[in-house]
Image (cartoon, rainbow, N blue to C red; front, side, top):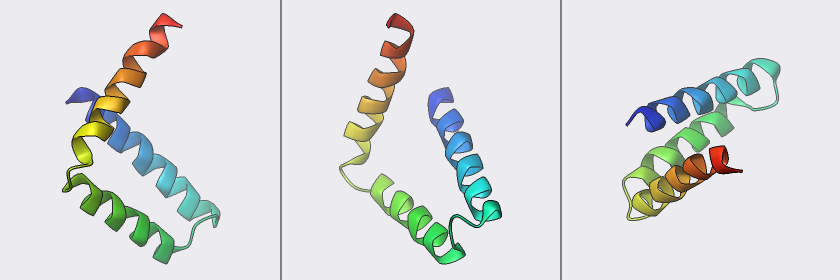
Length: 62
């Protein structure tokens, strides 16, 4: 759970700075947020969470 919250904060900060810097339009940000929201409610959410957890656990072992 802590990993999920950290990634949400990280992606939120990146999205904020992209919007503030003008690299991303508000419409594209809304679309990206909506895509993430709806993707989380599909069957793809579990494999994505598993892949993310695996990557995070292997980084210290490199």
